[in-house]
Each structure stands twice: as C-alpha cells, then as structure tokens.
Length: 248
Image (cartoon, rainbow, N blue to C red):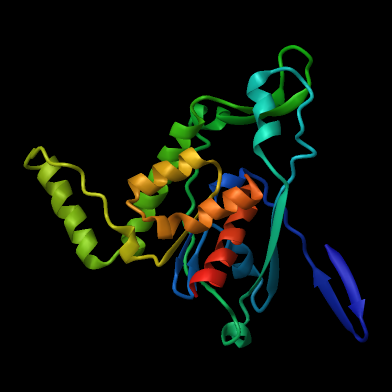
C-alpha cells in the first residue's frame, strides 16, 4: 500500500500483483464495449475507485542459464512488453470512458496434471538452475482451454439464432444419433473486433481457421506479432490500440 500526500489531500494506493501466464488473455471488442479476463472482484469491494492495470512480461527474472532444451526455448520466444490501462467504476467517468467492461469469463485448467505441467517454473535435472519449461502438449492444452472458454462465453453473447442452431444440432446428435457435423457458432455476429494473444503464427493460423475469421479480423494480432514479437499479455492492448487507430 502506498500513501501519497498532495497539497491538502491524502491519496491511498493499494497494489495488487496478479501472477500467471500472459497468454491466458483473450479480448473481444463489441463496438465501444469490451469483454476481457480481468479480476472484477477488486472493483466490487472498492466502489468509486480507479485502477491502473499494468500488463507486462518480465523475462529478465526468468532467464534460464542452463542446458535443458525445454527450458531454453523461453529465452528465444518472449520479448519485453508493457502496457497500462486506467479503469474506473465511478459513475461520473461513464461519459468520458473509451470502453466499458461488460463481462469476464475465466477458464482454469490447473487441476489437470498435463495442464499444470505444460508451462512450469522449476529446476533442471543437471545444474539445478531454475527456469520455465515448456512441454510438447502446450498447444493442445491451450486449444482445449480456449474451446472451454468460448463454450462458456457463447450463451452469454451470441444472438438467439445462433444459440437455437447450436441447440438443434446438439439434440440431433445426442438424441436422434444423426451423423452431422458439429455446429460451431459464428462469433463474428457477436463481436466486431478480435484481439487474440499474439503468441506465434501457427496459433493465429489455427484460430483463424477454427473461428472462421477473415484476414481483416486477424490483422491487429498479426501486425502486433510482426512488430513487437511475443510480448505476452501486453500484446492485447497493442492490438486494441491498432484496431482503434486503423478501423475506428
């Protein structure tokens, strides 16, 4: 907690550190409203407040100096990046706010052993030097987590027509045992812009294919990856700024 006295007023700042993997973030932007995975519980217990959210990738502390190949990969993948966004739950700020936080959806796979160990901060077996190890199951696990997240989010944002089509397809497959392709809803009907974590080109290609997105939808993510590299969670704010500057 930081206490700062300016003139005759006393301002109290509380600092919260949210640790985790940067690529857990996935943004969907609907016109001037935004849906993202930010912990809103702090706003519920601190009404009429401001929050400065800083997204950054700290690679210096986790730099690995050993010889384990699974742990050397992170030295090559990640780049330093940082972005800050000022949030407010003050009624007075509604008129001048750029975006409105509508809903958050969190998907947690930590109870599964493969998910827990796919990205793990540990010691290597040879030199006992610490670093972040990446398993070969990482991409499959990330895809499964995203699938679960989208499944949870779908009923909350999709139009009724898409939900009905999904329900009819599900009934036909489960009850009538019809051999038909699974129905995947069109999320472009719910979201105007997609800001996908710019991890690597293969991930973006796969998401573009599975979500049936166009090059226009993927441009912010691809340009952020090309210009800044893999900057983890802060890349989403870079993409949001790119979309705002070019498309709005």
